[in-house]
Length: 111
Image (cartoon, rainbow, N blue to C red; front, side, top):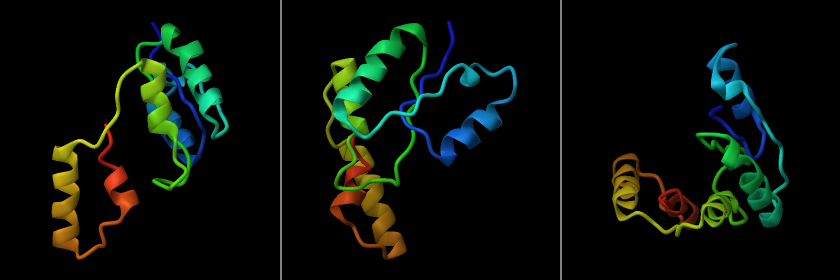
């Protein structure tokens, strides 16, 4: 069974697919999907039965409008919430680097 599905494309797609090598299963399919819930969920639902792994990448990082993680959870029928372990790691990083903990930084702890 092939092993990769992509939901949106950025330079990261080029790097991941290129680094995977010619014979890698990561080279099986790349899709570019707009930042719309229905489009992302439909693409995942159409492709995930055909592949073992689902990889998503794209966008400009955690922004107020980032919906990809929520759409992946919806497609798989699983809940998504902030993981307290990941949030603790982020808090420690903020503490040691002097960075500012913003809502979008905390968003990175969603699983």
